[in-house]
Image (tube, rainbow, N blue to C red; front, side):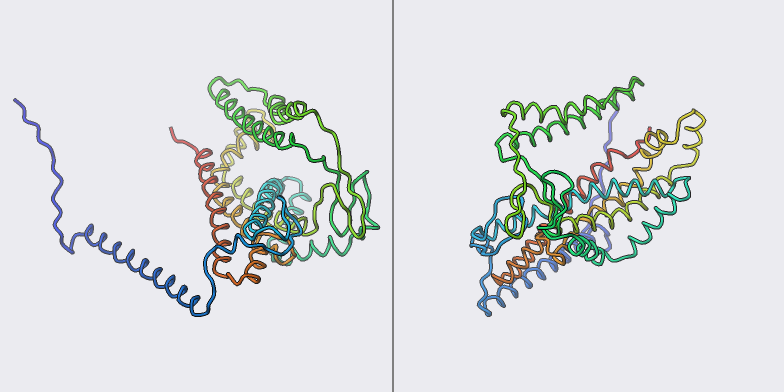
Length: 394
């Protein structure tokens, strides 16, 4: 009768010569030192605040702010709380960051591809753009765009009127806007649902093509989901068509939609500056793909456009995505320079709050928490996407 023997792990002796024991001791000591340092800093800060008779805590967020904010995506007035003011600043920061990420990605990708163009003029102009934009400080660029918009545009009374209801002046870009109606919120929900459904359809079509070799037409179904669902919601809500047109009242326009000079200057500056770095990332990613891929595709009779879109770029993404994450983080953090041109982002509003309340530590903590949270979310999403586009060895 066979007797099975089981290997036993050697017993550990609590000896300093054991690397495992030393590792545990070192980690405990370091953790204890960090905790002690943190306790000392917090305790010392609280003692100093108490001696200076400065109130601490975040209760000030419920108090009335008493200051106006020139640009807000939600309802706000000087009678609103400091907490709502912070919410306004956060939404303004997210607004410019999200739009800037999308626009800089599109522009940077186009310029990066143009740098590899066989057309001498296009390649040289793209190279000139990259070299100039990347070597001029971002803050100086923001000042340039803000001065260009505000100093070289006419006043409201002499505003340019290129289209009915559209006015361009040094107060910004004014345009007609649909009147408030409850159905518009559902239309935006329908846009989100349609976009998610279109992305799922794209993923399904790719898997189907990989398995069967048959391409699925995506253009019209995708447009139907993204545009058709909001249209159905609009029809269900009674198809409202009332439009609010901007009107000149006093020294500025009232009503309608508005794009302020501060937002425009910040968005243009961030987009063009970040696009210069993204262009180099895209160019490097394309050059990292072996030249044989181009030659093999050309031997099959494929044109340069489909080769780039279907063969080269999917392989280049594994090189492009990691450094692209850093640029997305940079454009979000660089938006804090908005305070220099008067755009009410979270830093600008936090500075006003700290000046009025004296809660400097809490205000700085809120700013740090906002940027840390946004950066971690961007990093998590890009890491997930990087795993999706990574080449899987078989």
